[in-house]
Image 1 (cartoon, rainbow, N blue to C red):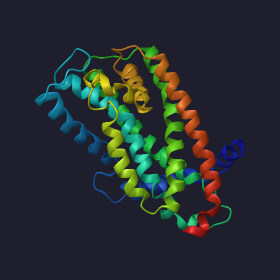
Image 2: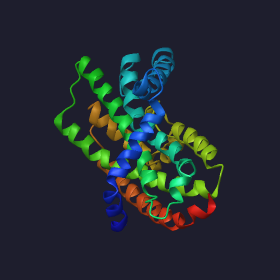
Image 3: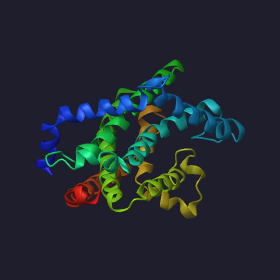
Image 4: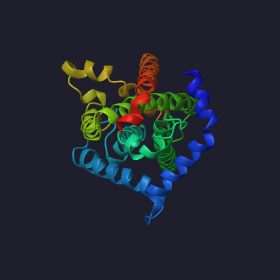
Length: 265
């Protein structure tokens, strides 16, 4: 593993060039360009806020109303959209770059790493917009909470990288991995307390949500940005351990399977 980290650092300029090319391909010819990375999530958040915050008036932590629900939802969508984007892009990233894969000296690990960094870049844009919104509403996150957020980000990156390593490796052997990933992310979205608070989940199935690794991540984001609930140390510990195990499994799985990529594509 240290050798592969060194390999990524050695090819950091190549990685940056691939990321810039990816952003140009996605937004270069569009009218709104990079703003689509913000427009689409905002439209999604607006629809959910209208349905659950205005029509259903869901109670989130003792407060009701579309404004409070909108902040609650936006905060939960920040990490989810980045993870979802990286997973979906990684399900086809090897096949899209088959010409690069067939080159003997090309570092294959760069491709899933590119998916993670690109998705994280979009999250930073959405995060900047979210901070502007909460500041305009008079809510100022405490320095302690912002420090928690700085700790969460690296863990989220490593967690997402572990997922993308596994998915990208499987996609070479199973051609329907992209469709499977889309279906899985849809189920995972509704199995995570993003659009609803934990208090609305029936007691009989609540334990399943606690074992979902995204549950503590979403709760940590809300603790850091909204500051209405203190962070759960046990949730942070669980997510940290899960992230390390996922990254190790993904790293070794990708390393083992990548030897056959050129022959299978």
